[in-house]
Amino acid sequence: MSYSEVDVSAARAAMDKYRSGLDGEIAAALAVVGLSAERADREAAIRDDMIRVAHRAGASLRHLAEVSGLGRKTVTAIVETGPTQS
Image 1 (cartoon, helix red, strand yellow):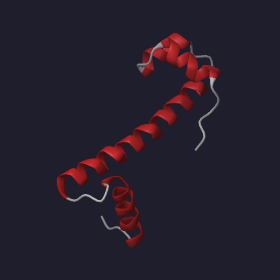
Image 2 (tube, rainbow, N blue to C red):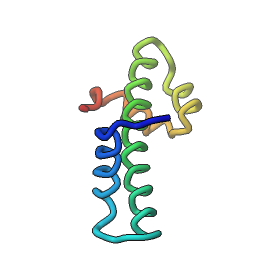
Image 3 (tube, one colour):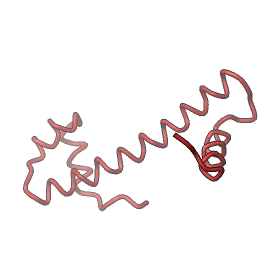
Image 4 (tube, one colour):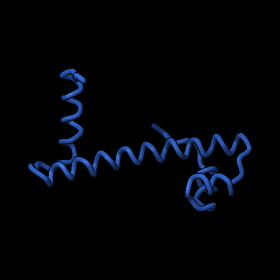
């Protein structure tokens, strides 16, 4: 697999965002934690959007809660809010 200079620069910038000017193991761990948090936020936004789509299509709150692993109150709150902003 090969990467362009742009790909490498983007990856380095993303990691540097979380490293807090540190080096070594702690910097690597901070970068992974920060990047994982970003990914989790994106995944939650996608999940919430799909919960809304499924509900509009007729899925029950109970079923959505069951398959998402969320509580019914949380699913209800998601359904009642608008789509996430990217």
